[in-house]
Amino acid sequence: MRAVLRAARMQRSPDVNLNLNVRGMAPSATVAINERLDEMRRAGREVFKLGLGQSPFPIPEPVVEALRRHASAKDYLPVKGLPELREAVAENLAQRQGVVRSAEQVLVGPGSKELMFLLQLVYYGDLVLPTPCWVSYAPQAQIIGRRNCFIPCRREDRWNLTPEQLDRLCREDRGRPRIVVLNYPNNPTGVTYKLDELKQLAKVAREHRVVLLSDEIYGELHHKGQHVSIARFYPEGTIVSNGLSKWCGAGGWRLGAFVFPPGLGWLRDAMAAVASETFTSTSAPIQYAAVVGFRGGPWLDDYLLGARRTLRGLGRWAREVLVAAGVHCERPDGAFYLFLDCSPLRDRLEAKGIRTDRELCEHLLEETGVGILPGSDFGRGPEELTARIAYVDFDGGPPIEEARKLPKGSTPGEDFLRRHCGRTVTAIERVAEWLAG
Ligand code: PLP
Image 1 (cartoon, rainbow, N blue to C red):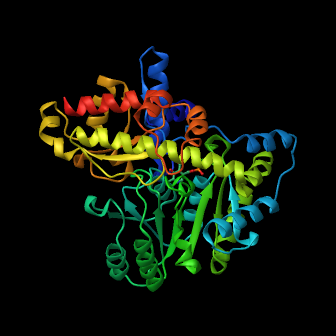
Image 2 (image 1 turned 45 degrees about the vertical axis):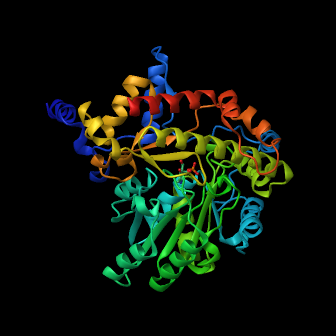
Image 3 (image 1 turned 135 degrees about the horizontal axis):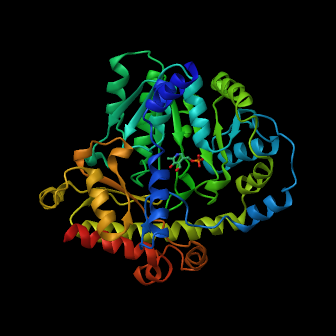
């Protein structure tokens, strides 16, 4: 009888045995939109996938070849990562950014997302998130039960955090331990910081001794190859986050790395201790292949040149088309995102019964087949009517080859984009028509 009652209770409300922190939690927005679009496609609808932020480019052949060579590597590797890979990550940071760190200071993990989760788990303090920000930082904090603190950034500041905003927050409760997440080129805006802005932010961060987590996963996809790490200006307090997912097109391989300043070794070690009790170590063949990616060479420079040019051309063109349709949108500096502010069209949208960003994305998907994500998934208010476009629904193989052959300094124009990025071009035109209609 007791067993029957227990079974009945479990059926009545399956939620009651869930950790309070995850009760009612849905799968990550980017993953959910991707799965939904796949389902619609299977049901025979024409859909355009501008939801999930996945690199459209293939993994460079030397990296794939290294994976083939190491497919039989079967042993667990050290929890902090393969020594050659830690060395290669540190050298990469030194060569590209002039930030000198030793291999000891590198921690490798199965994706930078997992490392961020570990960081939040072991650190005792607040997580500060300038918004709009990437979809997963805040849910990770919620899972752990960490306090997070949003700083809403302004459109007038290109959605970037200003030194004044950071200073104001830190003054509210001086000395409180804080991790501030800075992500640039930014997901969802595609915008980066100017040199002077980075210097000012670094100055404030130093003054208040906050830990900066500089999420530079899109650094190598700065459209002009001019990414600058804030670790140059605040070396003692900045953790640099990077990985293979974006600049190497290998999101599904799951490999990320954090590079710590010497004074934060205690944080790295605590994260490694938790890693040793959870994922043990990152996939061995993938780590061997990643050594080749992080060491790079002329082949990687060529690959990045083609990728950057393609993204620069497509980002600029798409932004112009959308702005002409009446929305506000910053010109992207890097990555593959555009952040739309549709509030100038509020009256027209309200006439269609659209009052929130989620309704906007739903209507857009139903009426055009284009899937994008509402700004509220990135920490913005639903009534602000913002949304993110990931302009990546094309096969990046051919354009990466063609774009690098273009004359120095040139940006692919509309003909190139129609030929090589046709699905994204069609999708952007549909969005623009729908907005303007
Ligand atoms: N940070 C940002 C800003 C991202 O957009 C993503 C992935 O979309 C990640 C981190 C996670 O990357 P990884 O594949 O290394 O976990």
